Length: 209
Length: 266
Image 1 (cartoon, rainbow over the protein chains, first blue to last red):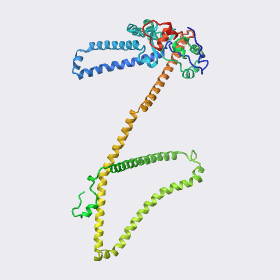
Image 2: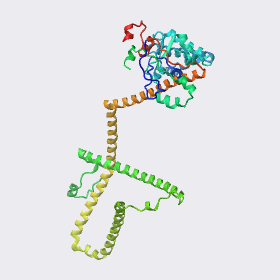
Image 3: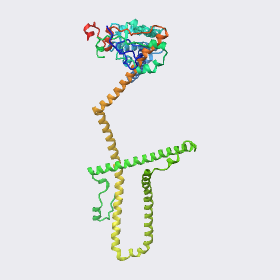
Image 4: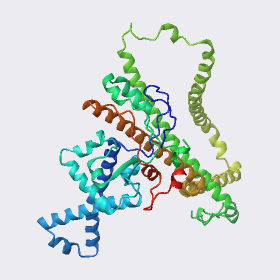
């Protein structure tokens, strides 16, 4: 794998074309936004589905029958199990068939295994367990993405997955350079000054760049 | 309208049929449409004129209040700007004449009516013996008959007008709403319009998504730089490239089969 000639860093040359990050590891912000979108979708669905089911059952005359026995702890337990199953099904379905959930699709990232294969039901389970583990120490497992060389959180490491940009991700140099970078102290700028990533010229999607 | 049974056959032939028996032909329908449209249009125009006048009055009142608060030595208009320019004078005069002419015509017509009444009042005592004389009796009968016929015709017109106004208005409203519906249907069914709307909506949505994505990618790099600076870690000089398989799968999700060199080489 050899690097192709790319324009200089857009910090040194603000008019330069930023590097194309298609196929490279996605960062924390992208992934958090995608996660929030998915969480909202799942939460909305979890709120609406029981209501719709209730209406449906009442319309056929068995609504009170089903709710009468499900009271207190039983009902809470049933709701919890349903929520877990639904969340798992949501992620498993989308990651397996499309490699991306709705939130991932909006932000343009794809979840794949480290060997490039699709994420199956078992790895989905591992990844969701990884979410819980990453969350326990105040989200440290997620912030691991910031310092990990492959931008993997604990859940990625547990499930053996990557999150990669599925679009021609180019940092918005106007937004990036003019709004923030020029206002930062040099000690921080030294860290932000990222040279372009290495991209294999032989890849099909890199050829037409 | 009930026609007087004492009317002669000649009179009945002269007066047209009552309104409920007016034939519905294309010309009648067109007339109804034109009258209805004019009726609706005039009503709408009058309403808008009244509203616009009220709005202008309100705005002028506000302007006057505001100008009265300006100190005399402050932002007052310079005296030379109050003097109209020579090329404006003719325009002002023409506009003024148009408005003044309305008032003149209005007061003139009132004067004409009053003069007519005065003339009638003064001449009627003189002409009364002549008009009631036996000599002019046949002419007077013919005159009365003519007046009676004319009055009947006017009454009939009033009745037709009353009925037709409602009918015409309904017809114009139906035509208007029908035309609007047909236009909307046409626009909704026209593939060109549909394509235009879809492409506009899609391109707008695409632009928004693109912008959001660009900013998140920027934020990814920015936040990473911050965190590395915070933990005093060595700056990252290059993003390590992911495995080739991962880069290919980023474009198209790969099936669960071994990747071949041919696929990589493209």
